[in-house]
Image (cartoon, rainbow over all chains, first blue to last red; front, side, top):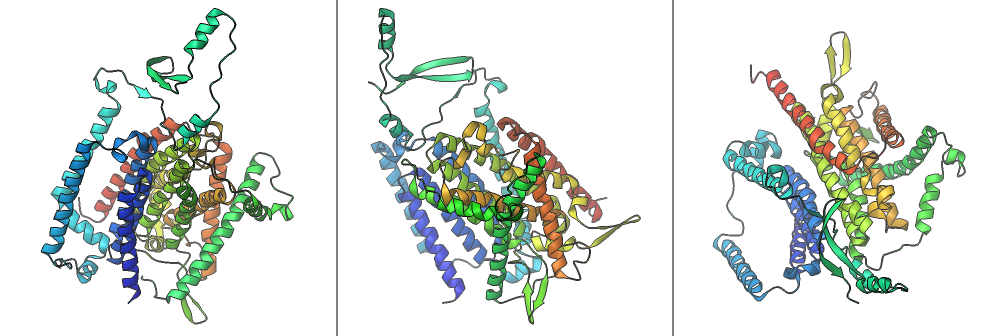
Length: 243
Length: 349
């Protein structure tokens, strides 16, 4: 076995194991880490195929930018708050299993209906060397043969950006509703347990009736507030420990 | 001009030497920083360990090795373990595409003074720069500490914003050289330009001055250095993403940050200041390395100078600067460069 084959099988094996890890990991942040590992190994396979540009772009765009944003979201959400991760509703499970089975069938059929080798494309090493390298070859194809799909994709991305701005800044666009942002940071992993295990709420020493009433109203819970600016806030409920 | 092929073991020796020199350089970068900062603040800096405090980096290393390695009880252990390594490894791997010279002959063997000449070398550097941020945000997450998490989130947003500027500021150079290889770009800068009575080297700082300024600003932000060191803003976040890290795990973050600075300086010197080019570098390869080192030290001095003189940005100023000021400028630079290039080629007008 040559070194090339050995490295290929190593990259392939690690990317498949990492892909399994994405599905199997209980913690969504761990899933995201496995996905980064998978992308990285796929980039390595691109390099072995002589597509260095594609590999670099794969790492910069997917591993470097998109997954950072995915992690961003996952880190702020306590996984216990998401029913999808632990106790999904029956209907979610059934639909999930069905969709998964359909996908598996599709992939299986695709593999069975062709030989594993696939069809020989026209991007041979000689032709790529003729236009000056893999970057130039990709650029030539992308900006001539596939120009329309390329522009369509950029339009879709533009719509996505506009949508994000609309969601983030409704009042500047005349939607009228005041801007509301929460100050909640979510809970870093384990912070809740630490809070629960922390010192118990102490009952203040009370003398007068007024103070007693005030103390009775204190139950160690916190008001959950929404703020628009430091001077103006709305109480939307209570949260915290029940004594 | 393609590189001479050489046996793999020779590349390994070159890589071994370059990476070790980089690590020693990093250690003495801390000494250099402390001395320069001290001079700017009218202090002495380290003086006790060795002559002029020259053994201070060694003492720091030994001290960090001897410290207790603390892991928070609520930490995500595996992620906590490997996050500092991500920063360190991605920082040190980047040096692989930096050329330190051409092919020389040692004992009859042709030896390439670079580890590899990747045809997408510049993208390789940008890619590993953007991967490095995982070390910061995963370490921040795994610490399960709010200060850490805030620092990690800041870092993620900051690096994503500024790596766009870094990448786009180099597009002008790619347009001028028609190449993504760092070595090819460096070789093209060894030509001389005749402008009127002046003979100037074809360094891209002359043809791409705006891109150079933008690159410099963005690279300082991407390496989390002052005045863009918000991920570890002491006054508000204790010490940001590495609050919970101690001992040698902390020192991997520290190593990573300084190696990133050195690599960024090497990158800037190679892309904009001609790398090894300078008087006499075409006759003797050692002189080329000296020129490169001089340029790198200039950039490192610039980093420290910024740290000593500028107050930290506010977070919204940081983001506003990237998206509202630098991004339009860098796009303008690309459009103007592309236009001039087309006119120069006679493809329009």
